[in-house]
Length: 241
Image 1 (tube, helix red, strand yellow):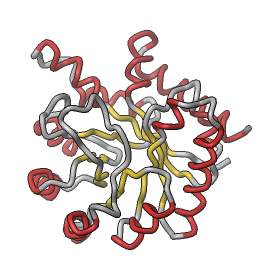
Image 2: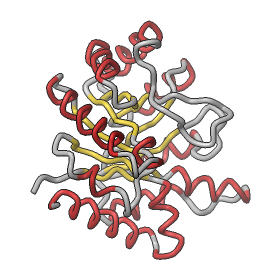
Image 3: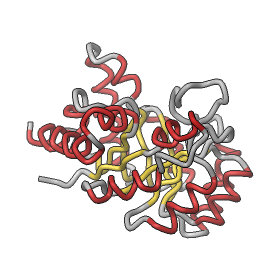
């Protein structure tokens, strides 16, 4: 059975910390706990408004992690400068709006081609692996390939919100196969839970899932290691199905 990597997003540990303006819970400690429990990497989104992860968190994560750090960010001059200074293993470029509660959709790499191209080039020149968080549409994948990004992450939000609609899963299956044909490494994430991750895990072309909110929510009741073990078990069951 193939190994489907699990990236754990620790943003909402920082959300809880920031709610009280305290120094705990520490998202870096959560990242180390996740790695000890079997996570293959850590994802953190440094937003423009710093609503959860902060600059000091990114520096500490880069200094202390023993597994890859995936730095989610908008393609802005400010974030590009920070990423080039920190030099994480990977940067995932995502759309970002101040008014959104969470990321609402994939990055429009077709409409944003001229803006994204120099950002991607600078990150790649610095030795940082670039991923684009996009909707599962062939045209977006084609443009991701043309822009020179070696990795795409398929937005699974529509699938998670409409589990009774088989077309949402079919879109992801088709997109993952198309990404592989283009030579792109294919990841997926957003809205995935223990209950819905199985069919996504069964998509053979996917090599990594990035999951955060559901894991932190489950950790409230069972602890983070147990939540990660449960997610891993659900992913493995999906691959065997």
